[in-house]
Image (cartoon, rainbow, N blue to C red; front, side, top):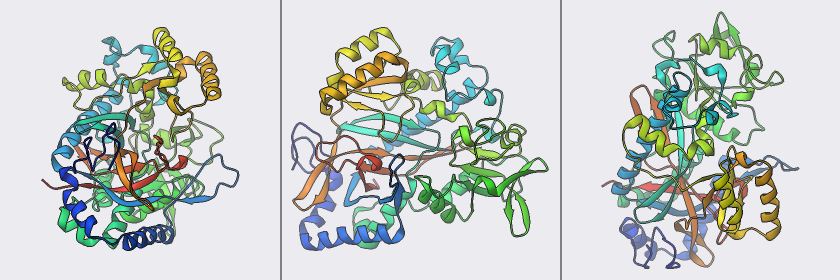
Length: 474
């Protein structure tokens, strides 16, 4: 059972078991708690054996850590998912249209819907992309949309991840682990599959190949290397797609194409799924000190000789100040009202908003506009007076670097603990694949869970864990 003030996805707000969990809960009631504890340990052993880890930047020891995994699934009904997937698709189409517009005619700026300085002064805006037409017109080949829930039909978009969204490998491994341990549950509950994601990913990337590509495009994954926090995922996806995992030193420009080193010489690449940030992608066009990218790759890209997924410059859609304009962006490019609302957001660059935020820091969540991973943020209700005073100075010094939002009562899902089922706050990152004329939303996504009681921070780097996410058939 759970606190009636919060919405629990198993128990609702009134401690009445919700329909999506009915079959699962019936099974759970028949299970021996000792067997479930053994299964929880088995899941941890599987993760350790498989090597499902991540690195934490900024730590002196920088050791690899195991992703905490909880065996109680997060369950979403088919009807709920239908509504969510429609809203996600609408939003992703709008983001792609927005990116094309700001690197071409900037009609949304001319129409006065977004201030010009929000684009031109944004550090994620790449002047090198102005006038560039990506193959197939696709900028955001892989997107992660972070959702939070506050009630039975109340879903909000918390963040857009259009640059290099991570976490899909954990979604897939969570499912594989649950299938190994509880195979009977998937037929009983009629859970939609996510296992085709690697095949769908390769097919979607291949569909975005440039005109110079052969009938069977050559795809590769570009990683910064083994010390990157998401290296496990880079290697996992390359292996699952059956493509090469490459680093910058494996690539060079040969005869106007980007080619990778092989035992038979250099082989041209048609589509490069890059997990390297824009700044490090090409030392001739961006950071000259970068050792992670490929000298000249941007020149090949601009000439139509390679597809880079996601396109350079898409990071501006991750910007949390741009996020605050998403309702206008969706309406401008689709002619429709957003099916999924934003969380109310104050742009601290605006004097009236800044005054309000400074007066209400104890009640708000304040984030850096380019922040990620749960870093660089203030959660007012759980912050100390010293934390609030420090953040106040940061806001006053660089107000344009921050946005603020109300502290939402995020929904909870039970975790399996020594004390039995205990509610913990969750969010959800569904993954979206975009190819010319097609948007595919994988049924489910990565549920991240705040394992500490009362915590709203779900990021693995901040002590959060993950759950398998079940979307039921209708």
